[in-house]
Length: 568
Image (tube, helix red, strand yellow):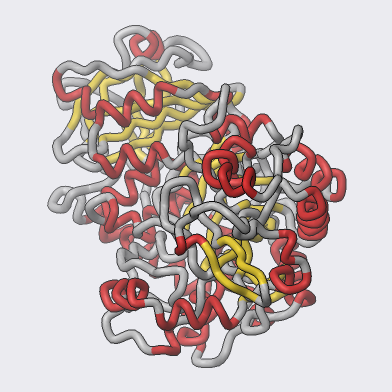
């Protein structure tokens, strides 16, 4: 139950605090012994008992667990991605009965709402076909991957990629459209919203439209030489597989033709229909259907088939139509910058066309590269206005687990502190809170069984509650330059402000302790010069001079792979 889970987390947090002097503490405060401060140390287990007012920690001043039942996605939301079919399989094992969308225990969602999750992305709910499943069950390259990530897998474990969609009806293995509507209503009642997938670039080979409307797809020209692996024969037509400009085709898919006006009209109607059943849409590989990208990917084929570039972009018109149908709809683009679009890169191009958020995987890439100078430069290179329209993460269904990709549980968690305290949407992934490190491929229903890391889960529980506060959603973010001399070069820092509510984030994403003086330009005391600052992971409070914080800076010491978030 949710109560049992929270009790386990609390016990784990006690263990963290007791062992801080021995283990590698993620959030331990390193105190400068030369300074004489007035300090209090409330219990760090229960946030309500830390001495930090809950209205400063949580998103609103409502009592713990009570949330607005608005149907609008909040600005800069905290998103939790769930791989739907694997999660249902996991829940079926947990409860020892078959779980489908309609029978998910409400307590599962209540626990996420109480933690501070604002949007539930139910990834992979749409109808799939036999063609894609057969491909996933027989392709030698995929079978090799399955053996590597899930030794001893069975045929039943292969459930098919959720991105080879036949049509936008519910996968019957998951539930019905009524079940989906009921889930959305439940989420709203808990103060959360629903996110679903839209896959604009391609469909399954055996999709409804490949037979009923083959003209909606790119087809092989009658003349010219083109790579043989681009094509699939289906129902009397030779259709192109979906692909991006640089990689091999996705052989379980067929490529839509956005330069065919009748298709663009039909796809816009499909998007408008989806807008009515969800609060947010995550749009798969959104940059692939930009005209500049289509030109690079398919230009010679389009020319050979007599198609010319349309004067408008699909997204410009389609997003307006979708938001006219649902004014509260939020659009998020999976996007990677190829350097093809001009004058703006792909992410900014999509933002200019109406996307509320675009992926910013660059921060994760810098964390994985383990180069602090590059990370510092990447954070500083973009301003508040850009970041407000981005989504950051250290893990999702396309990426290795954070603990594996970043070198361990601590590194994975501290990387999440970085990505969840930058402006814009913050995304977490099913299994991330539990400290899972094994890869869950999208074609599989399970990963290697792993024990829950309750210590990491407790830390994530604190982190999500900390960022579930208006200052991280409505406030102004400011990067703080740190010195490159001494051990301060190991630190990155930024601050948030919303009126009198302020936060300072200091992260050490390196393998040694870092000390530095972090200049907090907006530090001010209510009266006099003494300012009480509270580190939110530990609940420890300090008295400091606001003048010193503004001038020479706040002296902080952060352990290796550590993070501190101060309220001041």
